[in-house]
Image 1 (tube, rainbow, N blue to C red):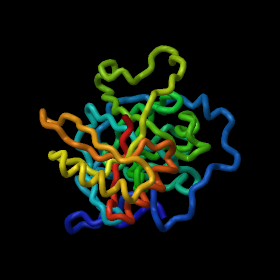
Image 2 (cartoon, rainbow, N blue to C red):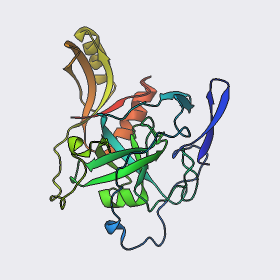
Image 3 (cartoon, rainbow, N blue to C red):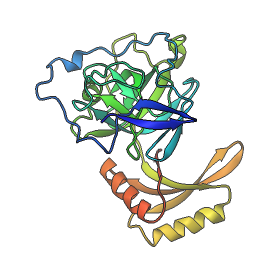
Image 4 (cartoon, helix red, strand yellow):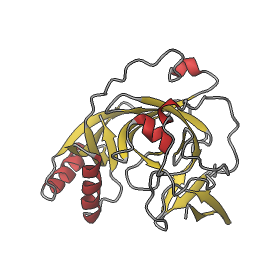
Length: 268
């Protein structure tokens, strides 16, 4: 089923989620339209944030999520997936019907609705979708695209892809520069290095201890690098570089067996 009961204070709120352990595997339509490539991007427009689909907090599979009050300046990199026939025609989190041929998407925390530009980091293709659903709740996935959106982005075959998503402010689209007014430029792949971040510490000694311990248990490389956070160094422990999303999933399972349940995908 696409819905699950989620406790919120003393109220049971029904939220549609695009991932569930109680449903059969999703699939593509048998006879999709031939002109999917010509389906236009979602057109950003000012819309009120709906009450439906926007609880301040909700829980899925034992994990609590906090919905954002604003999408302004939101940028995220990670793994995109897609959903198709299994949910086609079912209600999304805000009560609309999911249409796998529309340019829509699901996100765990962005306000509903939010318009986002999604870039495939492997081939440089860009699309614009409207977020009207919650999910995906599988590990290491940041956005679930409609079937058509995934087709246009070029990730249908593999089922997943490395992407960057940028929220669009419909009131000032030119300032965010994701809305293509002219003909789109040729797609250009973005050079990326893929890692799983397994810890972040203010003290390098702690980071090095975790790195050393993991290195004895994993075949993949483990490294420590530093980034500035509020003018203070933050030492990140990262596994990789990793070549594929399948390798991310395999390593995530291995890390879970070591007690590291929620590694974070990092695309540098």
